[in-house]
Image (tube, rainbow, N blue to C red; front, side, top):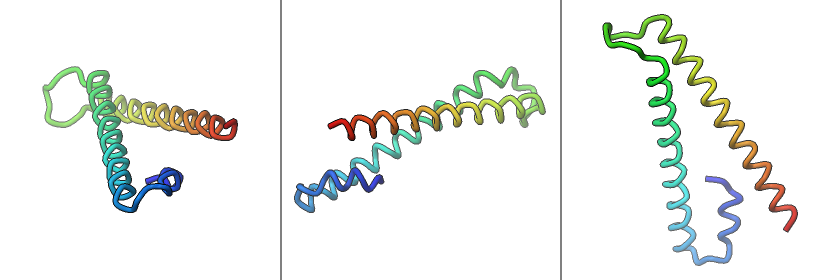
Length: 93
C-alpha cells in the first residue's frame, strides 16, 4: 500500500487505520485482478482464431506477446499520467 495513503489516515484511531489499510489493499488487489482479466480477455479475443491445437501457434504466441506488452505499457502510461495529475492537484491546494 502507498505510504502517502497511510499518512492521510494519521488523525484516525488505530482500529480505523487498520480497517482503511485493509480496504485499500483489497481495492488494489481487485484492480490488479481486473487489469489481468481485461488483458487476458482482450488478447485472447484479438489473437486466438481457432481451437485446432492445444498449444498456441507461433503466430498466436507472437500476437499475444505483443498484445500483452502494449496493454501493460498503456496501463503504466495511464498510471503515470494519473500520478502526475494527482501530484499537480496536491501541490495546487
